[in-house]
Amino acid sequence: MNPNFAMEVHSICDALVPQYDAFEDLPWAVLYEYLDAKYKNSKFILTTRPSDRWIKSVSGHFRDTYIPMHEWVYGVGYPQGNEQKYLETYNTHNREVLNYFKDRPQDLLHLPLDGSLSSMELWQSLCNFLEKPIPNEKFPFSNKKSDRLLWNRLRRIKHRVYGKKPIQILGVKFGRNFSSEDV
Image (cartoon, rainbow, N blue to C red; front, top):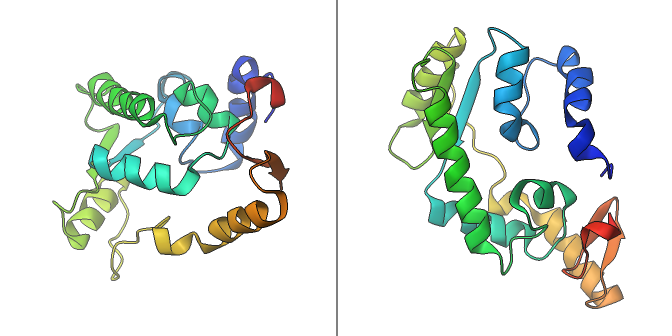
């Protein structure tokens, strides 16, 4: 990650936005106020899960793998052992987004992925919000535990070859002993 990312995030964002129609995940999720002010008529979608399921997923997926973007967002680069900090940030972010758009429901769709809505209700909410036709298929869920086999294999190979020593593979740092100076 660019060590000057925090200072350059808006210019990086401005360079990418004209090239695409949609963005997801980090850093986009935390830039909603900037994006809303800069790009009029933008629409935002907030997907949420119950906090206990969210942290279990994040901790199981990233474990002690240091990710600079996570340090920028959560204040700590890996969730394992920092679950409370991650949960606080997650819950605060969700509350802030909902509050920010509370008087503008036409600009924010909140999709709770907690099982309270059927596949058809999720599609209806999303497609109505985006003014698109509803597809005749089950609502897609991605990033499930079963989809992360490669990530887990890389982690196992790393441990077999390098033990607990922190290393970097394909730009991703594995191991909890990294600090922001290692980025």
